Length: 343
Image 1 (cartoon, helix red, strand yellow):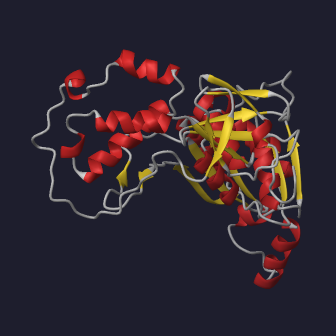
Image 2 (cartoon, helix red, strand yellow; image 1 turned 180 degrees about the vertical axis):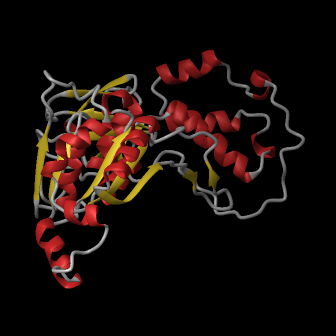
């Protein structure tokens, strides 16, 4: 991948299609093709373009053309309107003069998607009577149906996490991007840290930790012996017992699970052993919002849960047993001791 953010032959991409669907492209070939929705297009226009550039599928569905703004991206700046939609009635085909057969003929004749959207608006019996907000919503809905555009994104940890969660969440144990970010934060993953990762999410957590370090620090990715105990069936309590000797005193830890019960049992185990402090079990929840002038509101649907996280800080066994700082170790030396062990 080029340092200046330009797409090159052999790069890996995440394709953002119509701002809704994410898909992977592995080792982009300058003279190859790729699948975008129901179309198979040439990859040549992507070479040399910057990440984040916007492309539209041409009318013949065989190539891509660079555009500056998303099709029908006419965000109205009106904050008020004197119209209302109370007198409008949804009569299905009666409100639209163009039949489905005519629309198909327009598509076969090579009409661009934006032209079809304009024709649909002009042939709608109720379009002019709608509020400006409803008109904008109508255009956007039709644009998503008749226009396909895409944006090539860098394969960052967030983009890969979103793509997996959108396409096949079971492969990454339903790990959502916001839960991944919280887990990295609770694990104190930052530049200069030494991070131990045990996962079964196709390397997603390991890659996210490496990205978070920014080239400073170290990541040790390991996996338990699946012949003795498959990681799929490994209980969080057993997992913590296995890796506990590898953690330095005062090291932070975070454990993810799609289910709350196994983590609740691990929490009770840690509380009973008194080997950790600042223990907390939390659920990650995310609700996307539409942000438009005078129309900002939460989306009507969202994912039910982003999974659960158990986190805490390991304490030295002598302190855990005594419940206080030993008499021969003052507060300053304890802080220094913890700092050295973390680095």
